[in-house]
Image 1 (cartoon, rainbow, N blue to C red):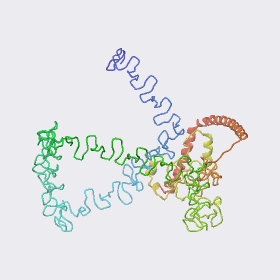
Image 2 (image 1 turned 90 degrees about the vertical axis):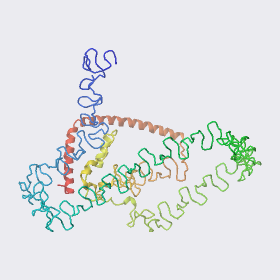
Image 3 (image 1 turned 180 degrees about the horizontal axis):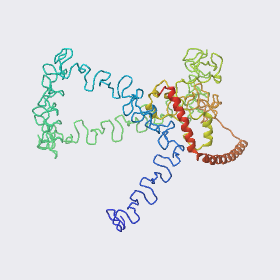
Image 4 (image 1 turned 180 degrees about the vertical axis):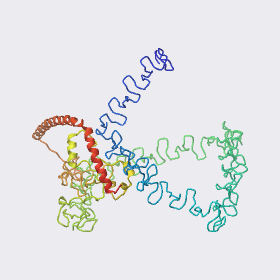
Amino acid sequence: MGKKWTKEGRNKITGTYYDEEGYDKNGYDRNGYNKNGFNVLGYNKEGYDKSGYNKKGFNKKGIHKETKNIYDKNGYDKDGYNKLGYNMFGYDREGYNIFGYNKTGYDREGYNKKGFDKKGINRETKTEYNKEGYNNAGYDKDGYKKSGYNKDGYDREGYDRNGFNKKGINKETKTGYNKEGYNKSGYNREGYDKNGYDKTGYDRNGLDRRGYDKNGYDKNGYNAKGYDKTGYNREGYNIKGYDKNGYDKKGYNKEGYDRTGYDKRGIDKEGYNKEGYNKEGIFKKTGTKYDENGYDRNGYNKNGFNVLGYNREGYDKDGYNKLGYNVFGYDREGYNIKGYDKNGYDKKGYNKEGYNKEGYNKEGVFKKTGIKYDENGYDIFGYNQKGLNKFGYDKAGYDIFGFDKNGYDKEGYDKLGFNKKGIHQSTGTKYNKEGYDREGYNKEGFDISGRKKIKELSPIKVNFKSINKEELEQKKEEKKNEENISIPVVSTEILKTEKILLDDNYYILGYDKEGYDKEGYDREGYDRKGFSRDRIDKYTQSRYDRDGYDYQGYDKEGYNREGYNRQGQKKEIKIDEEEIKKIKKQNSEIRRNRIEELKKEMKERRAKNEKEKNISEIKREEDKKIKKETIKYKKIFQIK
């Protein structure tokens, strides 16, 4: 604890839990802050850590630590509001939800959904009653609801919903019982209700609703704990776990012996096991180590063999074990467990390498020459170990992808699904599902590069667009090192408060968090690789991306990014010395250009930092735009 502090944590000079400077043994003052002004959690009195961020991850300017903008990963600012101006509970900064009501259920004018204020005055009539004549509680001036009943449950004639008045007289029968024979309390003349129970809760058989009589036993004679009057349960055991004969579920009595007289170890009261031997190995009947058949407790006779004829080591009188092998590992025919004799040959005369004594294998290849395959790896038939010839085709004439030299598979269709006659496999016509023939043209004669514009989405949609394509590209250039530049999305909490957004008829629910639908395409019709359904790249508007590879990952020469073609052959790259010098020169020029680019970026960042000083002004402009979008959103869905 140190010289200054006692075991209890008191300061020896001040006699309190704090020293002369006002700090405890751990270095914290009465308010929980150390000399540097931070508490145990690492935050100062203003709620910021050493890096200048609060518990939510925002600094004083409202910039989030991870996203580097005014919103966190969930889309909320430092005050807890998203771009639409709503918090995670669906309320705006003034405390109203998207329908215009606050937590207490009143709108900005102070009226609830029924049209009444807190004092019970109606919005339209300016009285305690609405146009229909009912107050906030739903009663008219006479005290009756639309259903026709007052607070006590009686109608204007004085009858309740079951047709009885306060005196218990039925409206129809003019007696104390209705047509079904039950009174106001629900009991018939015999004193039973519709379910057959009397006022005390028992039926005609004397059982309550749980099925027990007044003594607590059911119709089979068992109580709630499952025991009968004699104290045994349905399985026949008492509360201590023993049956009427004194044995538990495992079959042992209180002394620990089963019905045959043996305990859990299999020993009887005299110390003998079920086989008749005691711990000294003496057999009970003979009084010796051997039973009446001549075998000891381990099952061996005087000669050391068991009833099956094997000794303790597991070998018979001829020296072979149960598997039929001797101590050297060979069977009666002279072969080991792997099937080889002492000289290393199997029953057919071949060794482990597959050669016989003469040096030939089963295929007839001589061991010394190994001439089955030539120096290029092809056999006498012209096929390698993979079963492919020099042109990449197997014996049936197909490559590893299942196509022959003419580009057709076993069913007669090419890679695009067309046969030699130009008929498509799935449609049975000259056009595929997308409407293009084998040459890439549609019925109107246009190829895929001249395709029509993408159809617009349904006009019944929510427009959450805040950054267009050109602005997004500009922001990426201005802030290359920043992440999370994306089109804003709606909070899941807002979706929960607005059921209309959950309707599958609206396009917003057709896309995942990354903006792709179930088929893997975004709103513009491109997949994660950047290719459209017609295999056209988003940026180059051709069948090859900016790196020169098509949808399947092959370039114009037919090689993938690893340098292999469709037949699995590696691309040969030959570069002479002059070409190497040329590449080095180009690399040095690229470095110089990159340095100039970095200098330019630094200047742009400095200029951007100056702009960020006015971030509060920008935020106010964004809030105005969001409010406009919200108004437009409400009009689209006719939200009041």
